[in-house]
Length: 631
Image (cartoon, rainbow, N blue to C red; front, side, top):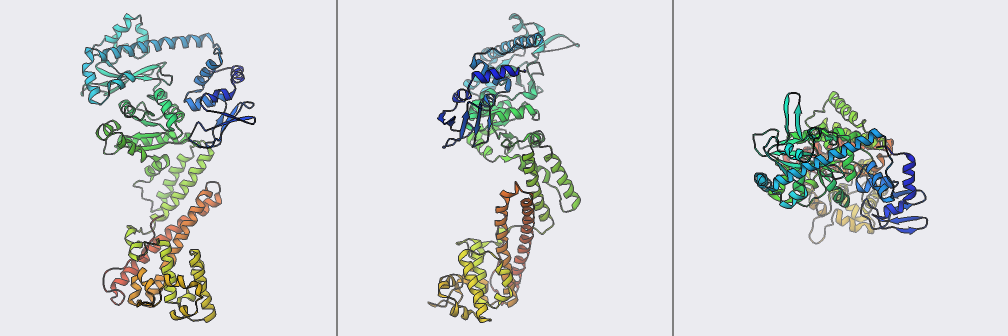
């Protein structure tokens, strides 16, 4: 319905925005404006402002803003025409008259709503009477309580082919109206129209205003198909724009800030009964734009829960195709998948609502589901398949209409593709935990710091490598205390040219003795010189070959460098969202990280094998070399 601009202006003139907002938000005067707590999320410090002069509100915590119509649509989850209607009632204004044709159509629809409402009452009466005993038994078996049955206005259609037809006829409803509302099946080849719903539990379907507009019928007999039967498309029931239980879920979803969308009516009813009131159900079709927009009126990030079977996964993928183009800043979707091939109704009955909440807590962002779909079982070891994967993902991402969101998805996609392609061409580390810190006996101080101490301890024990490795070591970023210690070692090299381990203990400034003891360990109290180093890296206590020692030093330098790359990645990621230069830097860092991880893994295996095969180095058991856990 269209409204003349003059009417909308009159509404804004009659209703100060502070009055409209003040019905939901406690406001206090702050200069020329009003301030209050955000109605869109919980906060302790007011960041929500209202300006009557500008007829505008702005929420700094979420970025949401707008006029009185926007506020009503956001907080009450209604469409623009409904918002106008509610505000007009508040202002005491009558809605503007439309054309005679539109008036007749609206009047006609009102009469059809009355017909469907009469049918709902008929079904309710059947369920409560003797003829509804079997249907009541079915609902009881499904765990649906009497109070829930009443709240959802559940009913029963008898096996009689003309039961509803005769009832409505006795109320003065014409056969034509019964056909137009989809309550009767009619056609040129059907001499006498008959009831569409027979011997079924009836679930009324409401619009967003809470009016009954159609029905879903669940067959009681297992051999009757379809198991679920919906009303057909009518002038008041448009399947693609309806979200089941919207009118009940609106207020709970607003309060909780979340809404769950499931596939079936009975699932939604069971979840609602279990205490999760912000729940709706789709109408068994792929999401339409209208349904997506409706869900966003309830929550900025609805959680869609699908069955874990093939059909459920396929439904999720179809939904992604519809949702992706409509993504905007602050509006997305998450996906949860049931486990053990159960539906929410079964899970709640068997294990309780907490089990279902556990499923919801494991929901995944829409991008993660899309990425998994496109990369699962895809061999990306050659350029052709890499190009095809990138083309497929980018084609879908380019459908996103919001440029800010599209750019963010492009950057994320590029980064993950770079990591995936780089790993695919390299030997994979496999079970890295077998080559972790525990085998180096450094778990108490953290792997990064422990490896730094091992490297510096080896330079004390084998100071002849200080000069040979100076360029690589000086480029490393040690912990501040160890950075100074490393500088002191190099200063000794400059002053004395060649060094032995005893020279380090003799000439190192006293301020570094505490670190020297921790890193290497002096020969005191019956302990062997280097006992701290050997405690962290026992293989050195077996007098290894010089070539083996040098390779170990190079290995630990690489491990420390890998940690530095990871740190650079963490620092660069936030900047990549707004800068192509930072994004390119991030992609390069990821490639370097993957390259270095493979190199470290391979060298660690080689060093371990050499240690095992040389009895002079190691005569009992295996030695392992560190590979940091995956970033």
